[in-house]
Each structure stands twice: as structure tokens, then as C-alpha cells.
Length: 327
Image 1 (cartoon, rainbow, N blue to C red):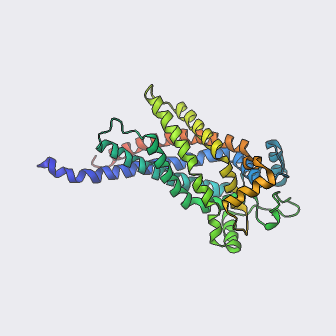
Image 2 (tube, rainbow, N blue to C red):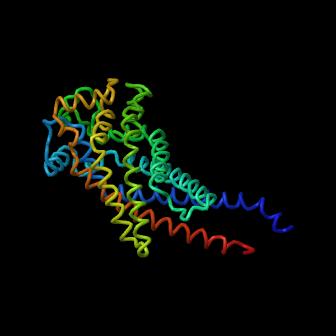
Image 3 (tube, helix red, strand yellow):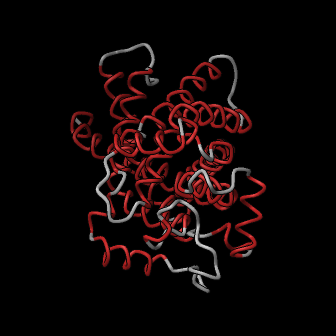
């Protein structure tokens, strides 16, 4: 009888434990994202500016660094860092929470169906990535619109010719804050501007789907042979992001262009057509060098940091109950 009486309590306890695990993964992902973003942000600046500037602007990474430092100093390489850190923490928290929630759902289903392995299949990993990615895009797109505006310095219609304004003519003495950029955007373009580029961003959900599917499947193969080490996690994260970013880069370019294109309702198809007409097909791959480098390094550090932070949180959760009074 006592056994039967304890059954109703088991599901809630398991549910609370799973919820705690989801949050632990989400917090670890947010922390890993913050650390990796700080390490690689100058490369994000270079890539974003290359994406939104016209073909008349600088073409080499060295020239890009030189021009930015001349115009704005070293701090110019970190334009929009505050909004980026806020954005990446929210993005990763939302993504990892929903990814782990969906993963747990599929694992429970595998156990109920008596499947040989509860590891996610390729299709299940892709579905989990799609759900997590779509939720993340809809929640965080406004943050990244503001961040792209700050990073690209596209604050006036006069810069629509694609080149960045020179400091003597148009650049302010001090960089606008995240809040002032947001308020200016709302005042001049309305709330709808915060969701500019949301369609290519939703299409870009395929990027983390590819990244995490490649990562999970390679990890599963490696786990069958030996124990996975932090170095393995670092390398697998890099490989997954390299392939995913290389495949989806044209959409990344279009999303950045749509984020900074003020006062227009240009659709994604029109944006692609305009870039190809004005700059050729190579225009869709502008800034791919710094972007791929940044994405690979960021992803590698993210996976490594996240794994370490998650393991630390597990140890902390085990230690805290043991130190509570009466335990």
C-alpha cells in the first residue's frame, strides 16, 4: 500500500527535477554565451560592418580594423557590446531552456515506447532545434535589431549609400547607448522596426538546427567509442558551427541589411535581389571570413564553457541540500 501511495508523488518530483535541470542548462548556456561573446566581439563588429557596407567600403579585414580604430578608437571594435551581452544571455537562456525541454519530452517518449536508446535521433534533434530556435527568434529579434544598429553605426538615412559616416561629418563624439538607440528607433520608425528581418531570422533557425544536430550526432558516435572530454566538446562545437554558418551565411547577410535599412518595407526577396544586382553574388558573402572565424571560436568556447558551467551547477545542487539544516 505504501508503494502505491507514493506513486502520485513521483511524477511531480520528477517534473520539478527536470525543470531544475532545464533551468541549469539555460543558465549554463547564458553564462557560456556571455564569456564567448566577450572573447570574440571585435570579430562580430568587423563582420557586421562588412555585411551592411557597400562594395565601395573597405574589403580587407586589416583595412576594416584600421579604419574603425582611426574613426572611433579601440572602443569602436566593441560598439554595441552591452546590448550584445544582454542579447546573447537572453538568446542562449531561451534557446537552451526550450531545447532541453523538447529533448526531455523525446527522451520520455523513447522510454515509454521501450526504444533501445533514449538518445535523440537526427529528426528529433532537428525538431528540438526548430522549436527552440523559433521561440528564441521571436523573443530576441528586437534586441538584435538594436545591437546591429549600434554596431553598424547606421543612425541616419544619409548613410544609405552603404559607407560608414566619417567622424568629422556625422559621427557623434560619444557612442549612443542601447536605450537611446532603442528610443530613437521607436520614435522615428515605430515598434514594427524592432521585428525587421524576422523572416530571414526564422529561416536562419536552420543554423542552430544544423549546428546542434551535427554536434549531437558526432557526440553520440564518439560516446560509443570512449568518454567525451572537454577538448572533444570544444572541437565538436567548432565543427558544427563551421558547417552551419558556411551554409546559411547569405541569410545572415540579408538579416543584417534588413536590420539597418531604415524607412523601408523591403521584403527578403527584394533585399536578395537588390544585393545581387548592386554587388553580385559575392555581396551575399561579404564579411564571411571574420564571421566564420568568430562563429567557430564562439561556438567552441560556448560549448566548452556551457559544459563546465553545467557540471559546476550539478555539483552545487548536490552540495546545497546536504548543507541544509536537518539533512
